[in-house]
Length: 207
Image (cartoon, rainbow, N blue to C red; front, side):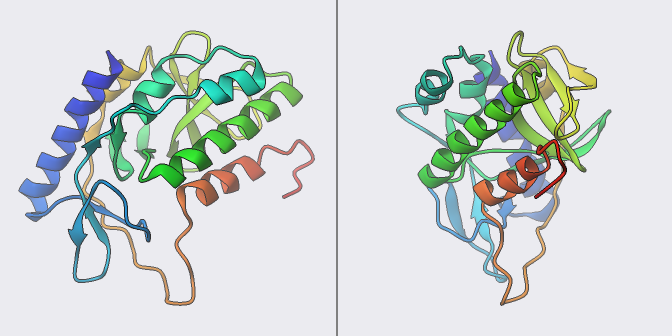
């Protein structure tokens, strides 16, 4: 089950931070969230994954698009509030997206709808974004739940795991302190960051 694999990775992630840096993981999220345990001297949020009850669902997304979504999507995003998870894997370094607060979850649903509508427009099989690896998206194949790398606007090109659970088992936590933005520059929210990724999906290349 992906939920158990995610809980295990959260435990490894927290242990890695506490053993390496003597503190909870750090997030650059500017807003407060249920997972927050405090703030460091730079004003960054410290956090530990907090179970979500009831779990978040994507029924509205499935209904809006008349599509059945792979259950791994809700297993990844619906069961915890947490900061994004930085990792190292055989296919590169990246971050697994997580939901920081309820507003994040709403943005996530909106952006998934936008992503899936664009896939329909491009006549490509549906994928579900779950993370970032450099300039690539880490996505679930909605048909079978396998995990792939995808260039925005193109079909997935490299399979990296047979399932979300298999992916989580092979990820190595990375302790990465986020850089504080300049005072006049706001840190992009979860929704803003994904919107930036989705802006590259326009076939004409316009943003």
